[in-house]
Image 1: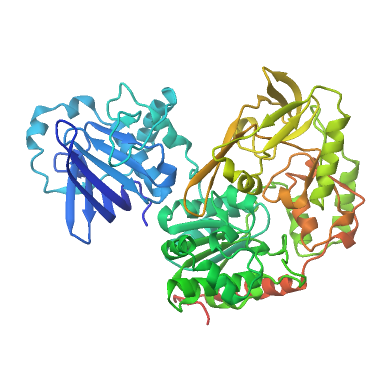
Image 2 (image 1 turned 135 degrees about the vertical axis):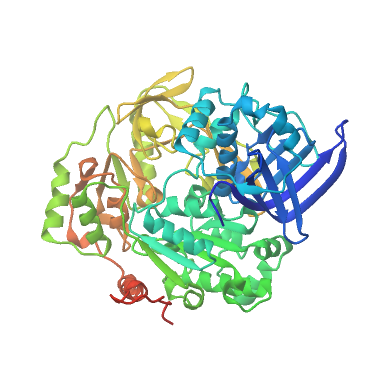
Length: 619
């Protein structure tokens, strides 16, 4: 799958209209290749090639309108006004589509207006035999296009239905009104991959079943979003073991996808539940299954859904032939058993050995920049506590980490304890209560939204309330997911927050969207805050906290102390009370798994000096 910017593979519907707007002809190609090219006269064209029917169409990139509102869902449309033709693009890998549209915009913006109106070129356009790929965008072209995009006010762009063409806002090659091109420069697939991340992405795009791991803060979720955006959305199911983790990657919970409830029934019962029409259709259309936070998936449940996949898809290939992309850190939170028996890890399941072929470990920590703190965390992760580590963490107990009226968030081992602290502290404030009720797009989905979103359905605030921001608003100003603040005022019922970083912010309603198992989207609008005197360790997973304290005396699971400590941005933003080395331990089965895991990595990557050989994975 190319991400070069001038090629794209997706589903294409082509629609030709007559002068009255009626449909003359309409064709759909489930898999087609689009290429940006130049003809002999240096004019830009889009070439559409549908291999199955060997159809090749060339359309000149002049007088076009591009509708790009849904490009992050793999959808867009390009209207060619001169030919009265519209290309409706769908099931496109989001990152490919965004790069493709961005290249069109950059190249159109960089064209010379005088050259475009040359009448000699107009006459020569009938000769379209010679063609070459559009050259890569230069930095000058990119900067010119970006300036133009950012200079215009932000507007809404919409992809119309293939059957209904309406006048919508868009970006076009009529430079007097450029529009939502700004959206191209604010896309969620932005950000460069490191070499180790790119290696994993390439393995996924080559069709391999992949498990990648790494300590907290190594960019696992960032890479996972990149992977999802590089795969065709109609055949890709993004899932996670928990609702909050699923929301973070724009997916659903693994239990929702699997359709077998909690999976505690017999194998026969699970197959019966999965054989329902709505569940079966989802299993059969899935070609790529992403599972985040795999450490919290029970091994028995994993075995059952592997058997379900083979049964529903009528093949004995591992996982029914579905490509698996698994991500997580087994040194973090373990699976929770739904029965009285102790849950087993996913790597202890029979399916793991059959299905997982390629393993990777991310090594570079991005969350913490302090090498001393990273070293402390790496040791804590594997249950190793030296005298130096004990001394370092005990020293943090004396630190004053509060500033700008923001108190430290207490991380608790139990959700109930965190809720009790927040309720008590809110009641202690004598100021007026303000209640914010979420606006849900579908009232029947409120319970699911409560389970999957970090944002509460009902938020109660007062002046003086300690809060946490739950969405990236402005990264440059420090308004990021996990930032700590305090309510200092209400302006026309809008809470005004003073953040620890010094920024003030009027917290207006924001939108969260989740995908249901059927592919429909449900959203919630709410003020992006949550009470933050206390937070549970489980709910903090994935967050980066800039002002946090903890007492680890009540931790009850291996990895809990590590998850809590690794939420802190730095040693200077952390306070550990009454630290004791007995509060840190790692699961022996996990230690053994990683020992074998790293030995396998060495076997694959070790290349003898002086020899050029292609190493295959050892059987």
